[in-house]
Figure 1 (cartoon, rainbow, N blue to C red):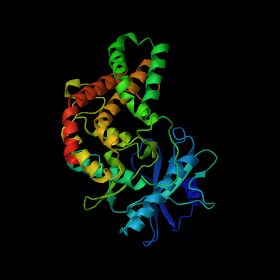
Figure 2 (cartoon, one colour):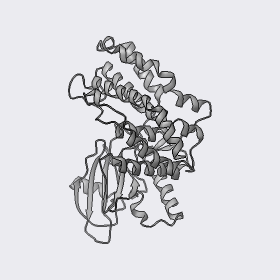
Figure 3 (cartoon, helix red, strand yellow):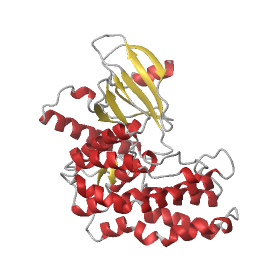
Figure 4 (cartoon, rainbow, N blue to C red):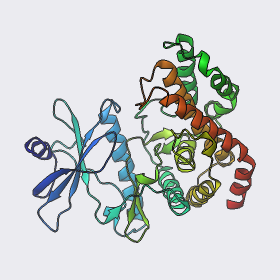
Length: 360
């Protein structure tokens, strides 16, 4: 507590600290809630930023502050009520930075949003909320006047992920290539189709926009009446194709089972979740989307199970050096699961196309 109090003292916190306790269950950053003594002052959230993942903290925080300031200005222009609960607000340090380096770790503080909840459940209701929220998030940032940087370079670059796989196959450090040749063949047979995002971008046909890049349902804050307050967890906000936010949500949200479920016959792409999310997303995003972006939303739904299949298989061939495993075949099980999800997406392509047209 003494060390954390010293860190808090480096920020412009306008209240008396009463207590600091661990908060939430995040996997990347260490998070604490700062409770203050004054009833008319806010509480705060203190986070230790994982700089093993986010190596350029200054750029990371610059991205986030530019995004939140832009959203706040939009809310002010629209005369939105209760703005303090509808956008994250970061607190500067005494020397006006948005992070503090203590010689070993990087820290940041933001205002705590009171009377708000997050949910883990993915059903049609929350999928539609998620679609609306992430579509609106992209829409508000479509005209941001500054250039943001990639906080994790090549995070959703399919060509880069396939190159990683090819290197793993070539080196085959654990002698596992022979046993997974079937999946290698299936993956490589789809490589041209699955890399068309990068190809269209090089041809000047597909723009990069500011995307969230981690569109899980629990990355939204809900008011007590069930309405969405704001999108949170902004570390991965960066330029990308809109496919990132659309496809990444569906990869996890629309799979009937978890990504490491061994019951492969139960893997299914849930069209009820797809329809709810898509309806919500297009209701708030179609105002700025180009025809080529809308046309390729079914591609986005297939891209992310494909990409994750590639990443899990690459890690399995390399000897499980990236993803944590609970048993030796864990990454292979994940690979097979995501491949079955990909096939289910492909089987539903024509229905997806019809539904998207109905939303427009």
